[in-house]
Image (cartoon, rainbow, N blue to C red; front, side):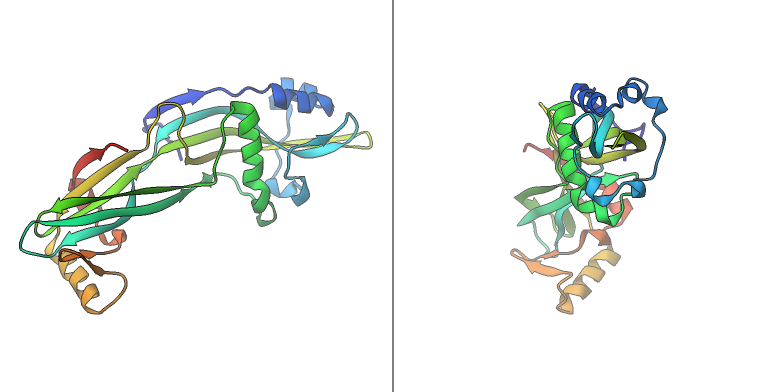
Length: 258
């Protein structure tokens, strides 16, 4: 989730006219004009079939809507795109690095299992009429390239995606037979997403292997395990989680155009 030390790239305020019309139509105008009056509830108090855009007339209707404060864009945390490749030869070698990586949405409030299926349909609707922007539950990043890897070195590609962050309340409305019920639960949703001239940042990283890691990768490959595989040119592709934080931090970096 977004923190104060992350680079803010863009911030947008929502257009709440559509939400205002829905709330006034169902008799909740005063709550919309003074949102602090809306009582807090738990997401589990919302019936599963009410997780949709409110419908109805002045006397009947129900649903959940996103009452957003702001949509912000930050530079996301770097993530591996494909597995690292280790040049286990005595000479420079041309090898292909990269692959694909799917990064999904995260949110800070609980949504019960019965509502999960329709949750992001609701987010799509709410963001579309509030910001004229679509929202995806996940994004797949793909990038690969052939690079020259020095002997005893390892190379990989990372992506620092643009992270779209929504901060606000979900408002539950129910109007039936003259009765009114309203409640809200607050949270933050984050997922990759670009807008305007914003771009995801791809980076090629390279660093010397440690003796210990090189031995571990060779052992995995020698056992015929799928965790470490031989690639063209004498390289070994292995799971990114074997790289230590120290190796990753000290690695050379070269930003790529994408």
